[in-house]
Image 1: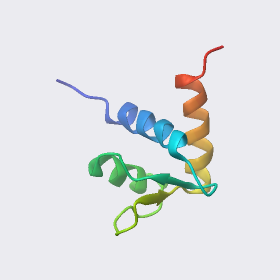
Image 2: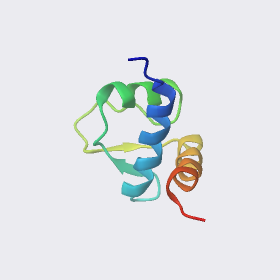
Image 3: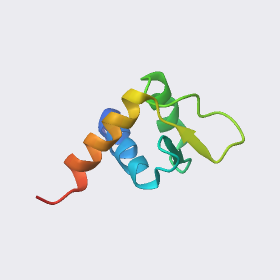
Length: 75
């Protein structure tokens, strides 16, 4: 199966918007490969660590909200 990892990353980032707290943190519940790719793209800070949440960058926060609205909000 040929999987579009960019679409997976977009969906994961959009879902992070659901668990957003403290203005820029989201719960760490996404696959490590996905969070590593999001980190490489500059959308989240380094996900490696003992904390149970990740920090979205300014760009990641903006894109997360945009993707959430595009993928999940009814017109």
